[in-house]
Length: 102
Image (cartoon, rainbow, N blue to C red; front, top):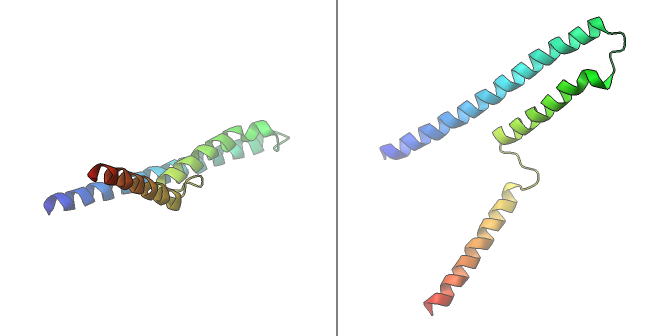
């Protein structure tokens, strides 16, 4: 019983660490890119050049992947798809086991 509680505690701590890591990453992204954009705005005449937003854009993509990982979001393979595949392979294994029992 104590092992189960320890296991739950470890999983909960891991989950909290994942969330904390994501929120720290997001905060650093917002702070750093705010300073970059303010600096660009104050020191350039043409603010809307693509080159000014490269860091913001690609780091933003990294943030999206980090969020998807942290919050278990997978648009390509949703949970229902995983469950169907697991069921399919369990059924297949069950059928193969029946062949050997006969």
